[in-house]
Image 1: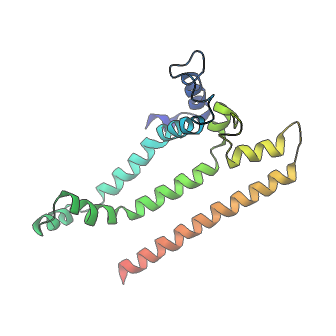
Image 2: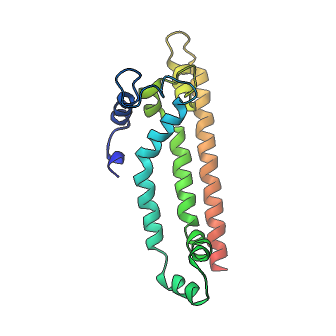
Image 3: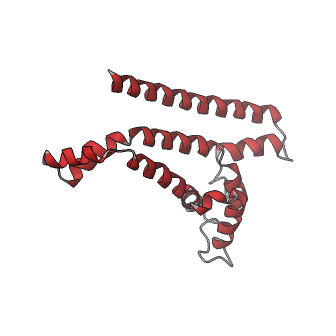
Length: 177
């Protein structure tokens, strides 16, 4: 969970030096356009893994032990208990995790910018780096274009959040029906 307490700029700089082409422990993945995005995905996963582990741990703690005992009495093996007891009861936790992950991906600017600035050859360009590059680039400042991208990003995140609320509300209605 410790990486969650660090600034993404600090994490980005730390991993940038680990992946540095000449002095890094793992030299080269940020310089190759085929591996740069994968390297950033590994860093992002490492950063947020502890947070999602805490979420799912809390979700697992909320599952009553009696349900596992009842499934065991009914003859369910380990796999059946996971598929028919654990996974359905972790649905809400999974939906929350996916929503947090997807909305977090839209604001992942700092890590991507510190490590690659969207390169090599725009291989790690994401919406937020594209937005900042468009709006504030010294070569061609397109403030209106950047504002339009920001508005579209906001609408997408709002749409995903509303979709989550609809699915969550439907699940709760079925629960009490």
